[in-house]
Length: 412
Image 1: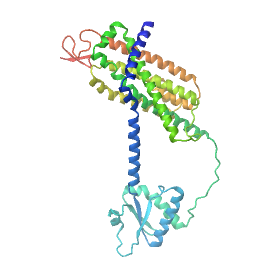
Image 2: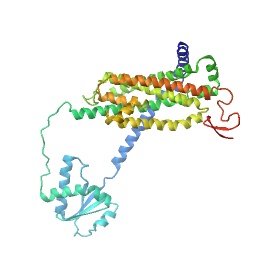
Image 3: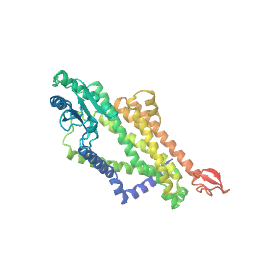
Image 4: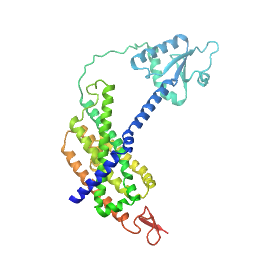
């Protein structure tokens, strides 16, 4: 065991030094900048499109006094409830005026951009619109007409407001939000960082370096050393990203309002420590799995072929864990907490809602044993299918039969 650990440290130090002191590490540190730029650009573009888009409105084809009354009621209510509560109304003329059109003609006129036309009288209104727009706006229009006909006051009563620091319902929902936010951050970090492990052994295999390493040190040391080298590199990158992000945030935001981010049940210090632990365990488990899968790939093209299903599996696991955030103490949440790959996501969300700590100790121990199991399985498969002499790394066996995935004979 000492020999394995000593050799793993040597391999890890070699890989870590080679990565950190390379130019590629600078590009790695700039990696999160590109999604941020895309997100900001997309948000600005979407906001500009929404701002420039014409607001659809409802035309009012009634006598001038009734049309003015209906439009006035809508404007008064919108000042109190918000402009998006009721459809915008526009008086388009009286039905008996010169040049008046029918409601259908107004709707087909693209200049007006009308989604519906209210005609008739306030006592007997008629809404002309497509079925979709009628279903969307009929209740709101009927409500406005009711105010206009009955002469109800549009002034809303102003209740006295008493502010409390927090409520039981608000605290619960806030903790769920904190747990979901932690899950999302963990997921994007693991997707961003663990994918690199897939191609970690391809270069050594193509240059025959792996044969030299396997002849001099246990292959377990190669796997462990490479896995922890990638983990340390990821943690270094995270430290730089978080420090940079906090620095920019402190310059932009002078002070965070109290309660802006709901406090987790275990408290912020323990929650952050658990977040680091669970990210580490997620990285080690997925990294061990990807290292074993990637070690079976002979070329970069095979690694690229594997990357898509691997990402989809990660996404499914994340969705499964995210669903359980609101299912606390139910069977589905317990399954997510026990299943190794979803356990870190489920447990970090649980720590935001439940103050009990011993659950996390049990979960972390289970995740450690599962990581060791994955590493062991990966090493066994690597020795059996890659390191063996003869046809081990070939797509044909001695009889000339082709092998699916390099493992299953399927014919000549």
